[in-house]
Amino acid sequence: MLRANHDPVEPLELTQANQPQARDALVNRLCDLVSWPESRIPAHERQLAADILVGLLRTSNVELRRRCAQGLTRINDAPKTLLRYLARDEITVAQPLLEDGVGFDDSDLIATVRAGMAAHWLAIARRRSLSEPVADALLQTGDVEVIEVVLRNTGARLSTQAIDLAVGRARQAPHLPAYLVARTELRPTQALVLFWWADFQARVHILRRFAIDRNVLLQELGDVFALAAAEGWSDPDTRKTLQVIERRQRNRAAATKSPYGSLEGALAAAENGIDRALLNEIAHLAGIKPTTASQIFSDAGGEAIGVLCKAVGLKRASLIGLWKSLRRPHGDPDTTNNPLGRTVYVFDTLATAKAQTVLRYWNWSFTADAVGIDRASYDDPELELRLARRNAALLFHRNG
Image 1 (cartoon, rainbow, N blue to C red):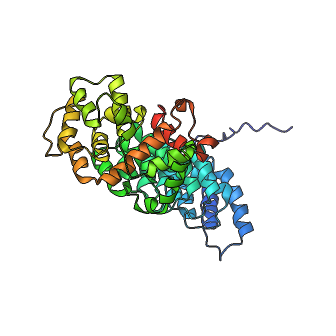
Image 2: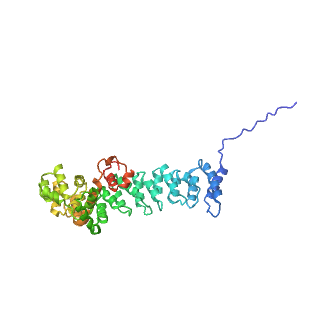
Image 3: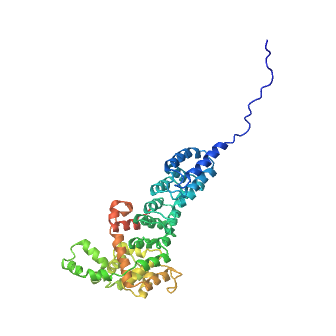
């Protein structure tokens, strides 16, 4: 008879942590393989290694994922699935890849912008070069810090839409105009909209760069003025366009009918206070619309008043008199440490013809379609086709 073996059985010991050495070695080796130069591994094998690696990295530690991302930065044909996966990882993993990775195309970067967070947007914005579509996607985020980094990036190419977005966002971000005015893509119409919420230095930059005379246009279109006059200025579009170019700024016909006799007479009356009727009269005498005059007189900095006064040929004393009539803050007109002094500086340094060009731009762009513009969208196809309407959207849109 067999006797039962009563020797104690050794229990299975599970108290020791399992160290996945083989797994770590596998991930490390695959990270090396996908980072090899094109000459060392065929594209299809790199892709297979990447497909396997994506599944393993999901449960790998941050250091392994960071190491893999760092290795991919220099690979031109980096597998897209792995590239996009790591680009959307936490920023300590994704940042080197997003800033320096050479394997991305525009669609990769745009997809990452749409799926990422501010830290990822900033990393992309710091890339050595940015195409127009990628820059558009970054500016569409509306993030002020991202917009600033893009504007400061000399390797970024900006579309008209991107500049429009930045100009609109600058309304609530006073430091952005300084970067916008340095961009070569900024157009005169955009700059002269930006003027309204730029600081003094940016405004001076805008006026120096974009306030131009109209000598060539006047010379080449002189006979057109004669034709339009012979037709009795019957075509409104022709009349409006030629008003932007013509040499004279003041409305002489309005002066003959005005009870004040002249613009100076109306300004003298304004010393007793300006109401809506007198403002409209001043606007007509100055050859601008009341909406434009209202915008100028309410300008926070006041430099726009200097542009108006220079454009209509007023003397320095008349400018200071108008300033007082508008109940603007007192200051030394001979220094730029106060609003009056900065306004007088603009008046003194801006040529009359150039001031007229700026004033005509404002009058043409900002009032052409101002009615109902606050309900318009910047990317409305009609706005894209109509320059004046788009500029009015930038100026009057309250959510820009």
